Every structure is written in structure tokens, then in C-alpha cells.
Length: 94
Image 1 (cartoon, rainbow, N blue to C red):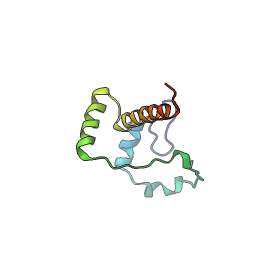
Image 2: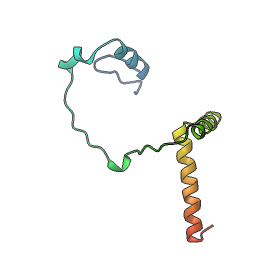
Image 3: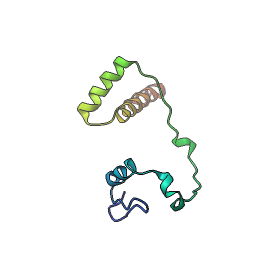
Image 4: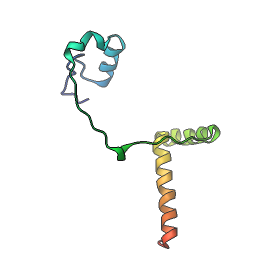
């Protein structure tokens, strides 16, 4: 949340303040202050879950922690590198 903005219901100025507010309040108490919005989602942005063996995930988690990135980021970087390398070998491009 931008520091210059304030939440309309909680009057929080940070995500942390907002989280603390909603930890102790119910949205049902503020129903009169809410409104319907129309949302659309880009199907291209959809994520897919893939099962990973527990031992492998532990190793990946350790490496991600060492590199100070999320497991998701590390896995996506590695997959991108592997796919790019595979694609360039298939086309004969080095």
C-alpha cells in the first residue's frame, strides 16, 4: 500500500497496520461500507501447481534460502534456463 494512501475502513497506512486491524475486526461489521466490484482475470496469468518430491523440495528450499529468493522464483529461473538451453540445442543455436 502506498504510504500516501489510507485504507477506507481500517484507516491503516501500511499493509502491517491493515493486517493488525483485520486480525481483530470482522468484515460483517462493515458491510454497509463495502460495494460490489467487477473483476476479470487473465487466464494467461494462471499458475499451475506441480508436485515435488519432499526431499527434493527440502534441497531446493535450502538453496533458495541461501540465495535469498523464494522457492517459486528459484524454480522458475531454473526451469526457464533449462527450457531455453533445451530449445537452443533443438534448433542448433548456441
